[in-house]
Length: 521
Image (cartoon, rainbow, N blue to C red):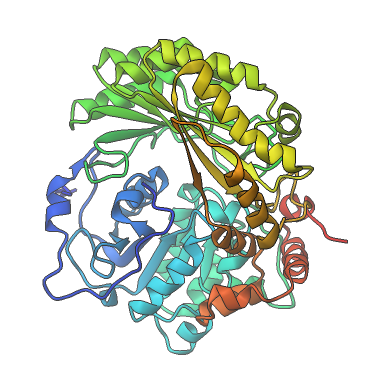
């Protein structure tokens, strides 16, 4: 098969898509890309593969790398699109979006849903699946992390939705697209797969066979990124997957309930992939993609292999009760002098109720060890509005940050976000605090004395309100998004009514594992 070299921080608020002028092109981006694997060129079924964020964020997403590579290997002429900086031309050939009859998107976060709808609209593609069907317009498919949790927010936008792990489903999608020319026949064929939700079929009152969220083993074929580029949010980093799912039980988190069971890739296979990539492209560090690096059974063995190649390492997540000198030395040895942990709260009892059993004393002890190993600063993630939280718990956040600063000497940056109950989690039934209460909690925390060397970042209450709405979005909410209704107007609908509608519809579709975890009396 003829092949050619394909050249080439998640922002909290991705740039607004803008119209493309005649001169806009991805040339500089393509020139900066290094390809890590043999990726076929050309093919049939011209497909726009969209990521609803900036190029730097999309190229730091391992799942997006996987889907692009698999489509190309299946002979599909997939080309990459991003929300910015050039939203309606493809990275590969600067092809205009209007040339593609199939559009596929990867939606990871709730806030990506309106971004995706807005990108379609601004690119001349109606966000409503009903409008596109009536006019014989493009076929739009969606997958991504949000489909494990609540796919209903996409049900009036996408013609088909891949539920769960997409790689095993792609051959069925490609076969359906190749074997049929009529829209209805394509959708009927797609609906035959139990992990593909076709709203025009499954959302009818008559219903259909129960659907399921597909979960596959950690891939032996795909375990590392398809590209390395300095324009990625992580810089010239090779992404390497170690684990999916999580064996822990944090009550606020979707990972244990929606993405488990835990599946790990062997260190020998991961090391082999990293070595192979190192012989092909240049990169300074390996980014280990795993919910919790300390839970990876063969971590020390893999770190030895990475260091033997002269590469640094970065971790997607680190937990206090699994932090070791070996892990910290891997960070500092690669030139990184900051680490990130998530205490969630400054109160030991409230933290334990979240599912995290480590104490403030353990946090300080671990960070003091990290300081001795060359770490200079720590970023801490906290939540407010947790179930059972009182004013003292809110103030304990500032108290813990002050203690860490005084007792370890580390610079401390605290990021504080509102708690949002999610479908499928142990706390899905918990009441959301609401905007007024959250603003009051922020004001209380800001009134506490901030120490020198400690800084706070407060994530938007408005964004948290939108996240809550989109986390529990029903089909009716999806319809409003597709029609272009602003989120601030959608928020006016009764929250519990929308949540109950979502729970009822998820149950009807067979999502018992998700729906049964949440109910509102």
